[in-house]
View: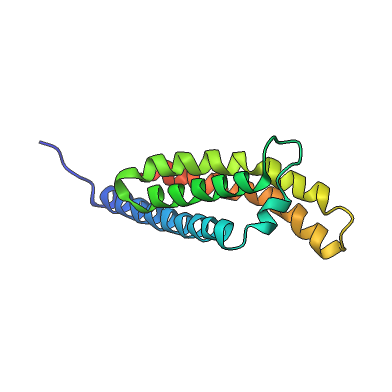
Length: 137
């Protein structure tokens, strides 16, 4: 016969709720940005590194599809863990584009330059949040 500690069970439920809320936030973020890749692709095209072969638009659309698929995976409880893993991979994969944005915007007015630089460390909490969702799913 096993007994369940009510405090432990409550903590588990609270952790799952927090994971679900985090997953929904990430899904909304990725879904919104994914849609923007199709509605307004030019800003995304402009930060694709020129060193990559092919058309920047292809990379813009491919990353938009990846964001939309990842958002869908995060939104569904059955695929949430896979979605969180995909989100980590996606956040790591887009980092070169963010670095390229800093390079391209280095001569822009300081608020734009600062915005580009500020995007770099923001990848860390997004990756951390996706890892949290993965752990709690």
